[in-house]
Length: 397
Image 1: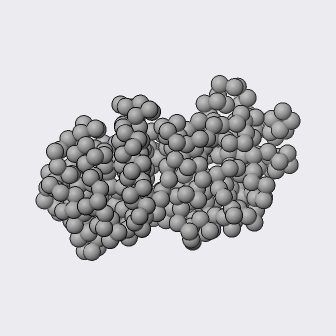
Image 2: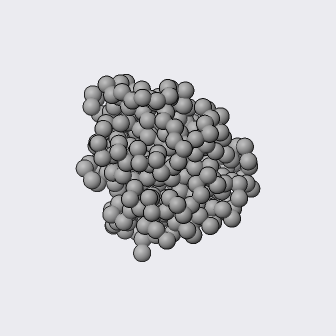
Image 3: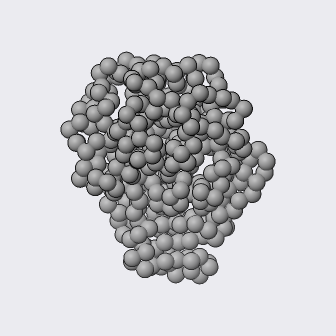
């Protein structure tokens, strides 16, 4: 283990304990019945304390032609933190700088979102689970606040990362997409500047007998361009599963700044449990049903296209939740304990204009839009020809 000796000589903490390495080689992808991403035994877990340590780790890994896989809290459910070809796991836990700069906040990649979520525009529903800002930026997408602000990728004004040449680079403007949902394939993110949000939020729940009427209401929200912060639509089965304000009708949660006003049922109890949305809903289902009875599907669909198959799908056959994102984009979640139902649904929606957001694939190509993916592929092709940075997670051709 020459690389371990070299790292330690440079003052880098390295863990070679097999139990810890095994723990750090896993993420939440085990919930999927379709993901095949068994880890290859890494050499060690390297723990940088600052950017200079990250640079040293990358430089030494490049010298020895050893893969590097960055790891935040391991809460990713798409195999992002799993080392497919061994190498070094780079634990970002100590990259935990927090500096409030008014309209922006500077965050080290290892900062836990639970400590800063109330300052962020967009954050994952699983924010209470120890998710880190770097892990979410490199492996997440939407979440709380996405109705008003869009995906987390667009909330960064600057991303610093050590690229596959061992250089600390600063990504700004649209170049921040080079690191967004790239899972460390283009570099090791060390810090991010994120836009802040500090409005006081209120919430209400609106109940609907039909899914179509609920979606009509959200369509009006989009058209009126109201500064609503967050919108989630839950089927009765979803609200029953979590046990938080279970309703027999479709329940639409709207969270909005306190200078707006809406009629409806007080939604604070559900808003306080927003960690049960989206990925949290899948986790709740998994915890109750077990892996052998947990099947789920999600995708991206434009609002107009969603209307086309409302009468083709029996949404009540699933535990269903719809995430509404800036720009009339919907990200629905379907969960069932019957594999056949999910497979039939997958086949049906493929006949419509949907963008697969595949939670059962290790390949990021199966989740990103072409323009975003192209930025990542181009950068990867230019700077990481050996595919040493989280190898096996992107198709270049």
